[in-house]
Length: 343
Image (cartoon, rainbow, N blue to C red; front, side):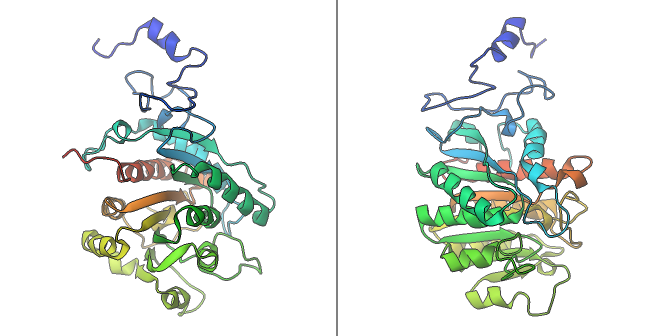
């Protein structure tokens, strides 16, 4: 058979210290790549992101996949602490080349899965400090983090670390909710407050912030006014209905310029018919095609980090939400600076 694998090769794949399936460290001359389904069955192998090698730090890496398994900030349905694990599980189907973008990122950048951030899930303010400290280390060498959440609380400490490294960033925030509350039940740290806290910390260049997909019932008709007052551009879901978002993204590229940009993608931006496995679903959301248009339209920007958050496996019976999140992360990888377009 053309794709037959020898018994000797199978034993090599499971050899202690194997650098294909288990772990890597330091600077390597050969770039990491996902384990092919022709080399190891999809049902096998270690459940790292795309079955990439796993290492404890970002030494020698241009890009890292990292999980933040936190859901203590969730206001409705919990379960997003299990998101990183399920996203990794579903990612085994993703192959190395992105035909639509003409990209083979693993030929251009060194990528690995650096595991999950450990934090105190019983104390959100303490968890925020621990997440920031972890990201300070992860990005100290310029590595670009692609994060698997976790609820949206995690984006605040990530942006703190990004700001301390790169200065205030432009933000492409794709979400059903603005997440600009001052407090939730009196608490300043929760998944509905990260972008207000980020503004207060100086993380964002507010003239280069866009929120796409906002919708659903709100507490009052001026709920988005604070964002507008800061200079954010707000694009509601209704403004996206029945249309391509390519023209919008052309405007966004002009808006972002060459400055550093962070992308935060809450999976509930998608209509729940596409992504039911989330804590705060809202009807009337974006389509999968529009999500891809947003990410593909971000190619060429100076992206210094990105996340996909709010995947809740207990509400994702068929795994389709986690599968979608894994694919969005691959698309994010494929548009990063340093990844070439081959067609």
